[in-house]
Length: 135
Image 1 (cartoon, one colour):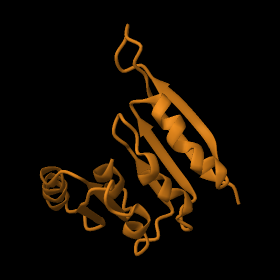
Image 2: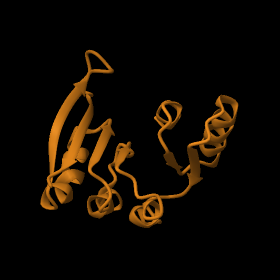
Image 3: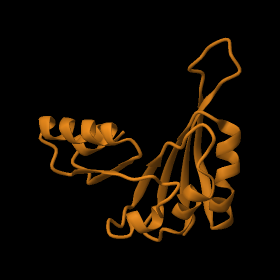
Image 4: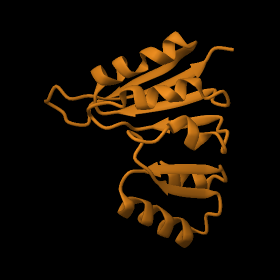
C-alpha cells in the first residue's frame, strides 16, 4: 500500500515487523525516487502504535492486521486525534469486527464496506472497511 500512496505525493509512514520487508520498501522507494516514504521496522504487538504516529500526525491510516487480528494493539489508533479516516484491510471478517469495537465506542463509524472473494468456492472472504471519525 505504501509505494502507490507515496507515488501520488502523499507523505507515508510504513511500519513492518519484518526487516527484509522494510529493506524492500526502502529499496523500491529509492529506485522510484520517492522522497515522501519512510519505512520503519517495529513490532506493533510490543510498541505503541499511537506513540509511533504522534510525530507524524497522520490524517488517515491503512491497517492490515494479521489473520488473528490486531486486538488491543490496533485499538490505540482509535484515540489518535489527528486521524479522521482508517482503511481496514483484513483476511478475517470476524476478528476485524471484534477489533473494531473500541473504534465504535470512541465515535468512529463504518462509511464503506466491501467483501472480496479472493478464494472462490471456499468460505474465506477478505474485507475492506472504511472507518471515519464522527466530528
